Image (cartoon, rainbow, N blue to C red; front, top):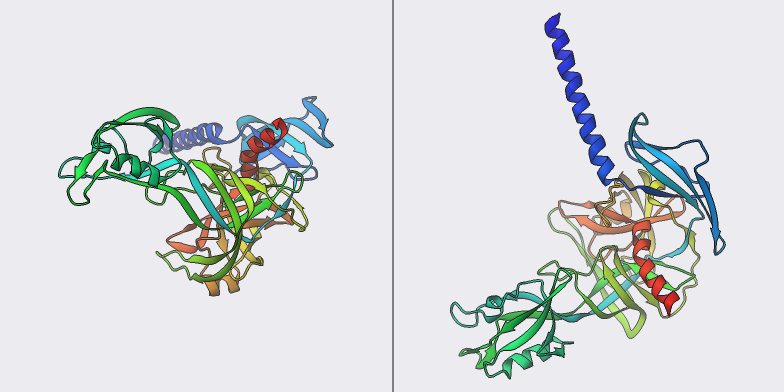
Length: 405
């Protein structure tokens, strides 16, 4: 009997410690504020329930025709164990025009991106010795602002081996590097041992257009350098209309890809921001499509949904998916939802999610809840999505700039 009692006590202790660990973890990673549209549910769709505590801690406000109401709440594990205090903001759901149409993306970097460093002669790499590394962004050379890789190559080749002062940015911090090019017997010119890039282009999917501001959002993830995986610093950029002409079907271990042709050289929008949540900017012409309400992340649930995407031509189609998991952790801005393609037609044609579908809107219960961002290489029927709320957070800076102007 004593042995049984000790066993039960040990088991209870282990369970208690495990629960304390779970509570501590989610206390750190779960957001402190949740937005819910008027009439929407106030339940976080995971292991937790948000219960609105009774009392007078309610603040109503109205600005610009939008009414909001703030209420104190508490997150509870399994609806019982307190995790943390939170705040629920009830507000009118923002209306956005869902995308789904393909867009061509053209981006010029701010300065030039270092793809890698290399030896010019045996054992000598001037750039590496100067402290330059892959992923760095070279802003200027000898005080001259750089806007192309060709110009930096020209400066290096004409240096006659004299020291060049480069202004370099790494992880948001700027430093100076002194590079002394060496003569390459193979190429017959002075070189610094730099592989550099100043632009990129590709195909993605438009996520939304804000009918009030004309701001668009696309991709749901940043445009990154393909070699270093570093987010490209935006110098200038634009989106153009695209016609999808074909695709490679996705297979396990080999993701597929959409292929498209740029319709014209005329930009349909200018890119003003390239960040973790996607690319954002201003449309150059209005959309005639109807807007639908968004769903805040506290309202997104597991279950049936659809995506809008284009696999042929330029007209979006709606395909069935299943939202398998919703993650409210504040640690990730772009991998918030796990989805699985269930539509027989899309599975037959593309095998599921393919590259180029990034940004495809996710619709649930008539609301825009997010966008497709990534495909699982091991299973092309499944992938990640981003909350539309997280994408809208990134547009605040653009809205503030527009208001300031």
